[in-house]
Length: 377
Image (tube, rainbow, N blue to C red):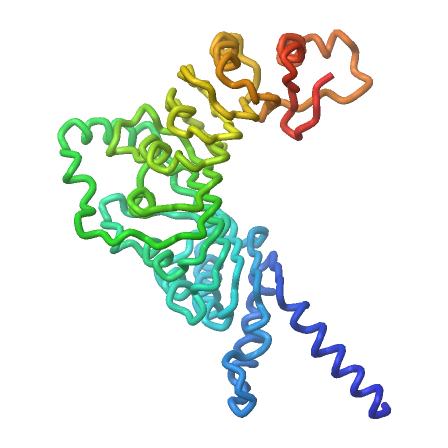
């Protein structure tokens, strides 16, 4: 090979490798293990004479996607946890980390992510499963400490453990005997510094040390909040409704959602959602649909409901009087029927109800869309 060809090859390699490693995705532990070995070997061979603070290719990794990664049993889960614990310190410029919600990171892996050099570079954390000790104080929680280090986080997606009927009975009994002040324990808590957090998802979580920490921290940039409602559980045993009230002033989008599980227990939503969020443009409701209260004009533009329910029509009709900018009603759990089906099928059940709602709403300039944002005709 000529010297020119060699130079061209080296130039292409230098240009292509950073792009190749910038966003990596793995679907099995074996691939992730090989990737770690590659980064670990490069770190050991790093030459300080070149005066580059971090080794390649570790410093090139900006996005790490493990959302589709599969593992079987406790042995592989432990293997994955160990790999992540060793991998995080080798990726100082990691900006986006996605993980499968079926995997729960240990305290050591979370600490590795929080204490590594460059922790401040993390911008997005998605699919993070969180199983906290509810009695733990915020400053003793490793996830709270993670976000003390990741102060530039912009998007946060966390899934809790949910709440079964037995837990609910115990919580309601405890709430009658426990004083509010004894529940909070935040007198000495120093608020988190998260000035860039714009999108926050807290699913299947009625209360946690992290939720308590976020509740008592300013979130000046928060615009989109996705939350599982727990309006039937009184404050302070549940922080969900209080969270909306506290951080609702600047919200542009509020999505209430209960993840599918078995058995699924749907909790009610607050009726004063629109009053708590005076600048809201998109509201997505969960069953059971609340009887929303509104007595003055509101800038709401998009309303999402699971499907048309006859009992909700009077609530919607009243809501329209104070929402002159509302132009879209979306059914978040109903899909438009495919073309070619008979007119009888299109008039039956939910599809027939949607057609009637569309007939009423089209006169007011409101479009009715399905779960995929396709318009019903």
